[in-house]
Every structure is written in structure tokens, then in C-alpha cells.
Image (cartoon, rainbow, N blue to C red; front, side, top):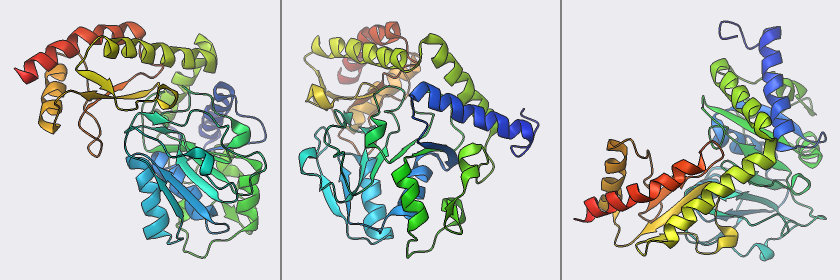
Length: 340
């Protein structure tokens, strides 16, 4: 496969297989379209924003850095004067106050804050606006209420495997209707265009990608999806992530110098778990992370650069719970070394 064009019959069939497996594992209904698009999750989100926003008032919700990025896109790039609802790292906005007449953009799971929306109950069934859910680090680990989500995006390196600059875009019938009935006022880059002559470009959702994908990355994604199917599908993936987060929770509870950045368990992530460290500044966290990496005990565990100083532990389904449990003594050692 790696020596063939993505436009060959074989190439298209493998891309379609990746889409079909995504539908099966994530339990996406047949009513929704699934496409592989350029530029990772960022490309998928911005493709949807540039193509669909402007038809209705917009609300953008932000409680961490990636949500802030969508605020910047809406305010400074598209200049649509949205309603912006923000919360500090570790907290979440009051979801009950979100206007269902607005298009709403939000991160399902805040990768850099460890805060997730608890469920989709706050999304009205009779909403007039569309929901845009950046679901990177949420899909494959949390239940996605597909009847509540009109645009869902992710990149498969979060939770499921390697990356080559690919995003996944899932559209409800309401989103497709918006695309076919509305033309934005601003210029549309070629890689964002999903319609032609007022009709959805159906090939995008059948393996005919807009630009050249890495077939190596696609095969890696297929391998991960087949593994997921083999262990029991979505329920097994969610169970693994939950077990990992629970194991990490026990480590935190046993140490008075560790805490959760997301203080409310109902909105605490079970994938990207962000921890506070007593007395931590950026230098202490960098030292702890370097010590752990130097011993091959943990990699890339420093919190995101825009977040409060702390640790970020990945608890997704590809991690074994025993490895999370083994992390506790290593954290003790690194903290003792860094504060000595």
C-alpha cells in the first residue's frame, strides 16, 4: 500500500476502510458523514468554522488553550463578534446558560486543562444552531451523543495512535444542510471547500481526500482501529481509559503534594489528566519531567505551556493500567529529587 497512490483503487479502498472502522468503533449513525481532512484536528475545526459560521449568532466556549484558539479564530480572523464564555483552567463555564439559538463551538475534553463536559444533556434537542465539538482526546474514551453533535472533529493521534497531519470531520444531516444552503462572505481556502455548485462534495466522505494523505499514517490508524474492535470496541476503550484515570486518582489521593487541576470529578477528564504539584513553578515541573524521561519512566508529562505549572498524565485506552500504577513511586522519586 505504501508504494501506491491514495487515488488508486487500492488507496481509496483503504481510506474508506479507515472511515468504515471509525464508524463501527465510535458507533456513529449512518445519518452522519465521516471524512478524513487535512491539517489534523485544527484543520478539521477551522474547515467547519470557515465553511458554516456566519449564518447565525455564535457562542464560543473556552476553558483551556485550544478553546481559546477557536475564540481567536472567531473574533480576530472571521470577525463575527461571537458571544464568548470563558472559565479558568480547572473550571468549566455554566453550560445551562448556552443559547440554543446560537451556533456553539466548544472542546468536549480540554486537553490542556483536564476538564471535559460531563455529558450532552445541556444541548437542546430543538436547538436552532449547530453544535461544533472539538472532540480530540475525547473520542474513543468517552460517550459521544451523536444526536446532539452536528460537527465533531478529532485527530487520531489523541487516544488511538500515530499522526501525519490528518483530521477527522463528522457531520450530521443538519450540518450538511447548512453547507448546502449557506455561502459565507469571506474567502474560502481550497482545502476548506466542502461544496461545489451548492452540493456537498461527497467524495471527501468516501476516501477521496482533499490533499495527499500519508498512507503510512492511515495504515497505522487502521491497525489501531482493528485492535480496538478486537478487544471489544468502544465500551472496552472507555473502560480502559476509566480504569487508568481511576488508578491515577488513587495515586493522587495518597499524596498530599499532588492534586487535580479539575477539582470537580464530574468534569474531570479520563484521558488527559492534569495534576497540580505543591510549590510547583515551571522550573520544578521541567526538572521532574526531565528526571522521569531520563529514567525512561515517563515521557512528556509536563503540563501544557499555557496551563498552570503541573503534570499532565495520559490515561487513554492504549495505556495499560499497570503502567499507571507503576508511575506512583516514580513520581515520589522525581518530586523528592527536584525539591531536594
